[in-house]
Length: 229
Image (cartoon, rainbow, N blue to C red; front, side):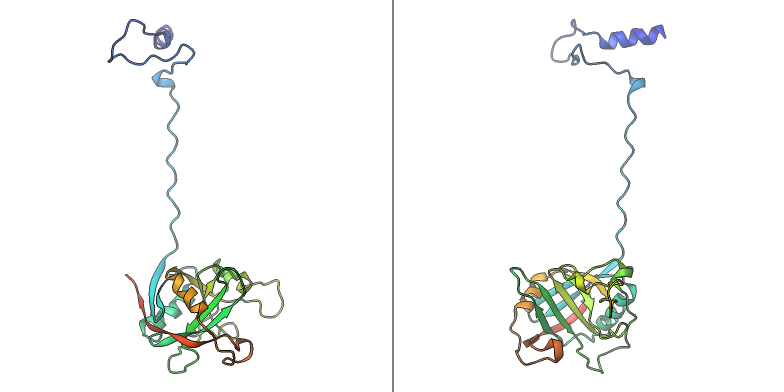
């Protein structure tokens, strides 16, 4: 104990006799000295970041420019697997973006829709519906989602959101069709291409029912759809 007190006094005392460029710095008189055995413990290392859910990327080459999609293989497993079947079997090659739903706004707001457009020889069996209330995804800017009639009827038609349209999410508290649409990924490159498609002229007469006036006057060709490494 006496030795420890002497050591503390020695560390706290100014070393006035030690001078020159090699002299150790002396703490001010009011700075308490800390003995090595009383130093605070090092903080624990930060936990590693949580792993991201597995995704896969697909490049759409269109006549308006490229679009790269990042698809949710875990959170929207069924819907992503369905879309990748169309990609791997080249069923999207030669199809089009044919619809542009525009809302008046200072910034691009709406959706562009593409895919097999109901052509039976290109369509595969419908995929089970994966609502956003299950996947945790939402119709935010750049989201890609499946077009459908009744829940569980989606095949090979999809749309890309520009802006944010949360009204398309599942809403169990609402009335009528509350299932919403199935988001399964996002545009990660080429969102400007989708904006260009949204801005393209539409026909005032083409389209049926609610889609009348939303059909592109000159549909944009999807030249190819391929997985990326």
